[in-house]
Length: 372
Image 1 (cartoon, rainbow, N blue to C red):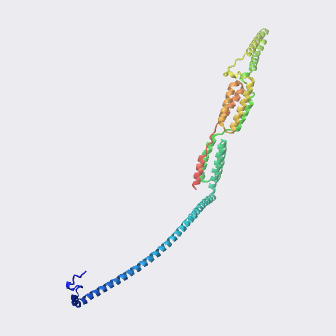
Image 2 (image 1 turned 180 degrees about the horizontal axis):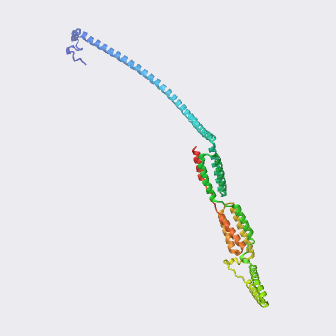
Image 3 (image 1 turned 180 degrees about the vertical axis):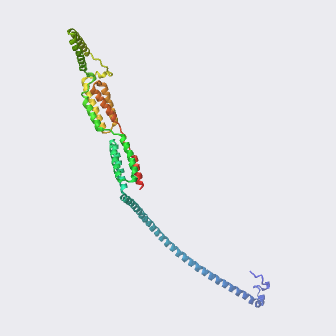
């Protein structure tokens, strides 16, 4: 391509003009070329230096990146190792912590036991007395609940009151007042005298074989005694009349006595008895034997129930015995009446007795022990 600043006459394909213009254009173009070449050289040198510096920096960065990557890998491996070690250390620490907690709990329990032991050893004399009284009352209460008698509780309260009276401590007076109240309540409750009731039962059992039955009652001895009394009462005025009025009056009196004797003998042949239960008169002799034996077994069962504190069974069996005595035996006999009265007394006395609890005394002991 041709330069537009060069005239057409000075083109390269025209040698004549070029020869004529060459001396005038060389100096300026050379400077421009040299300047451009110098600039280009300087730019090339600067670009080369910049490229070299950039390449060196890149290599340095690559080296640093590789080094850092290697260091990061090493650090990551080390971190993994440390994590595993830390996990194992955590497990060991957890096991040791659990062991320490167990030892601490055991130490705390031992410390508590030691403190309780020291407190029990450091109690004063009054506190020991209150503790002994409380234990004795609780033992007596259990014994009374088992036996159904308040005797053990009464004895324990009396002994505890005597023991506290010897110390003469003002703060124990409230405990003694509570004991007095519980002692009155225990005495008012009463008790079932089992030995006495057993003796009465033995008496009734011994009388069973001798009690007369309604089906075998013989009242002729009674009638004969009445006749004898009438004869004796009539004999005295007859004797006095014989002495006063003579033999005629005595003969008349003897005649009246003979008539009365014949009438009494005739009346003694017939007996009228009111029977409320018809089957009582139809009782056969062998049935009477079994009736008496059944009553004995009932009374023996009553004794066993008394010893075992089963008062419901006692009341039931005594009711049956009393009904049998009223139904089959002659209630006009003194022995039957005595046996029925004995059964009634046993029935009244053999009842369940509620033993009172010494709550007031126990509460007073707890209050006195807490106010130390």
